[in-house]
Image 1 (cartoon, one colour):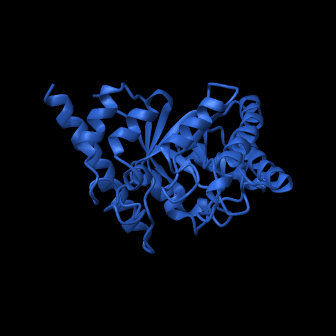
Image 2 (cartoon, rainbow, N blue to C red):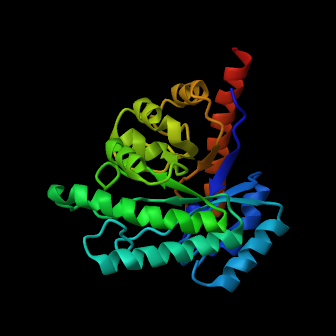
Length: 279
């Protein structure tokens, strides 16, 4: 089994400044990060702030591995309104410019709106709109040297169905767009291993979180009902060699958040060790 790198999303500290959490994250033994784009955490519109964040990340010996693009109801690349799609595109370009300043490898994007109330008869048009925007956005990412990665969304949202995500990938003019498997979203949506199998040809990275199949709890691996041993075995069989980013919820006490993150990381490492010793 691969010794996959296990990083941490700074999204567990989304309500506090990134400058307040970097050193505690480093002191907890994490060296690979996904950077959250929430304005209270790191406002991607402010270039000087982003540059200072990059300097601090590098000063601490950390790696900004990925950047999560902003997501909000107003950022809708599928919108039926062209001006709304243009606004979404502009925001994504701003985010991509910030990601380039942070020198990340990947930009992770929700390929649909944060809105569950969408008429079914609009679905195909919205799929086409998403493809049109993503084709253009891909070339911005490529120019900046950043890989574009689409994340499977919650089942009640657009692109929460694996078949829709696969349709988007197949309809794109380019084939160098990856998938970030969100384990919590996939577990709530369908059979998790089946989702992994369907997306395996495009799988570049994993957002690792757990839940009890009632809601998207963002628990650390091992704290919910996901069969992580089966998942890791399947990823090994598929020769997945990407990074696993822990995307867990935060606690008002940062020390508790980091303790949970360490526990989730240890759970994955213990399973990996078991695979190696049982070969």
